[in-house]
Image (cartoon, rainbow, N blue to C red; front, top):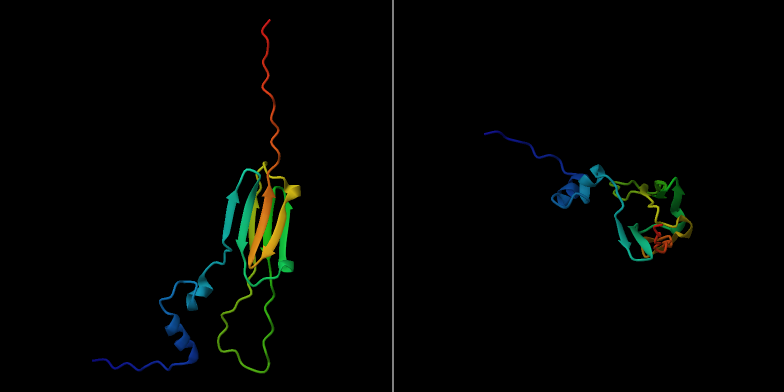
Length: 142
């Protein structure tokens, strides 16, 4: 029979044990996951509607740019300074940056794109260009 010593418990081990078995975005596994902002894209006859979930941000922190038919949405926030009054034992709040790019279709009117940030959701309206319809033409055979 082998006798094993118990590992000393500290606050970090207790947190890890508590979150063990939760989905990957919880607890210790959160550090290993790739950060990707979820996006919904809808279409109607007049426009495409892009919704990007980004709660806890300020609209001024977003950057939306178009270059060579590529729409890029980015966000970057700096890490807050450590408080000198206390020692941090565990830090799981992260101020992450993200960047999503989308190729614009030739149907989209890039000059008419509008953006609105409301309740943690960045909403972009990408209007479609008016379709030019050419009347059918018959050619007379002579």
